[in-house]
Image: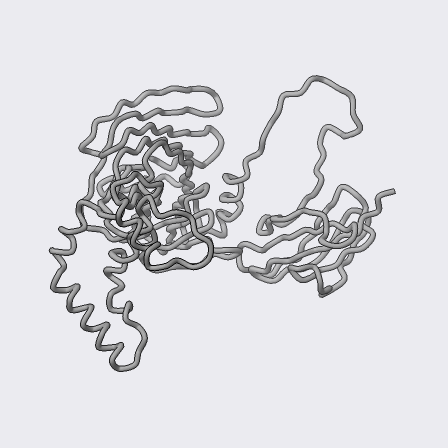
Length: 389
């Protein structure tokens, strides 16, 4: 992928092909990955590539082929006037005990920034969750990977891996091999944990953390009967007797995923990545209509915010009374004065607590315009009283 505006290659394909599906053996439990080191790369499996759409707005490539224990179809969507590349991946998975990821290796070397709830922060290498994006940037140029419901990322050695799904079973074929290979280290960690317990420190699992995925495996089976209240020892034992039965945790069947690459100049603030992530998860929908009369003008907006670093996340009826509640949040870590334009005249407005029970400040409003200020990373709740006559 070549960025014409920045005059640079976007991906380092010597490490991974762009959008390469990576399958890894995983003998962990439902919560923790336990890699064995065995991986299956895309380059061992041939694919068919076809240009299925070519027009003035976009081009679509279709890539079809097999992979380890799966069949897959991928679509790559390139736009004429949008600096974003969309990916659609369909997988029919027939195996188990695997972690399936898509990999991207940015050409740019930089720091990883993850979008967190109502914030964004830099993180070190490792497996972390992100809301809508992870970005690697050196401040001058960057590459973001946007997701639409797959929050599991792993950035390591400047490579971004997005987890599509994990398949887990009770008795993984590679489990015994993994235990045998690491047996002496496992015993050492158990002794360390017991030693800490003897000293009065209730942290038995701490030394065992590298092998945490070997425990609590019974929930990856077909499971026992539904029960009310707490689980008994028998409830833990019954699933073991059904280890051979197919479980939802195997994740066999068809899967569909959407995600996007967004090359950009500057950092995540200059690229306004929180908004880009919000856009891909809340796309505009268009509808063809017959010609008809109406009261609305050719252009009309119910609500406008004049600052791009602010996002409207809630518009609803207030919990009490007939007022409207709006919730906006600041996405770039800077204090901002804003002007909010509403389609109806505002009688009065207040900034309240998230629960709408406590009024913080009165806001200035004039006709349909509301002015206020918001702190960096703030989640602000606004209560509006409209003139409806």
